[in-house]
Length: 92
Image 1 (cartoon, rainbow, N blue to C red):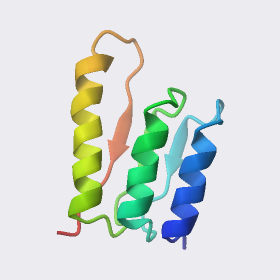
Image 2: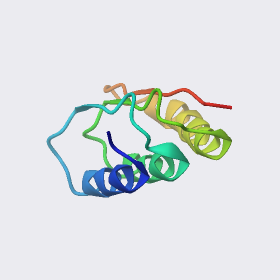
Image 3: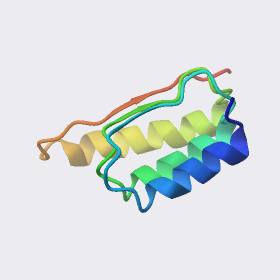
């Protein structure tokens, strides 16, 4: 089980990772702080194309961060050839 601090650490590792393309972290306890860190990391990491954060105790604050990222992504990624998938659900 990965908790908030582990999620934050993994997200920070994505800042320098350039080989991992898929990451399934479903059914952990990453929470809002972990979700927020993943959003921050994904803004600079273009290598990761699939991230599953479902069933992670993500509440309204984390969901808002993810939603904002996905809206911005859909606006900028239309011209790029690669597609990114981010799965999550909110506990609210």
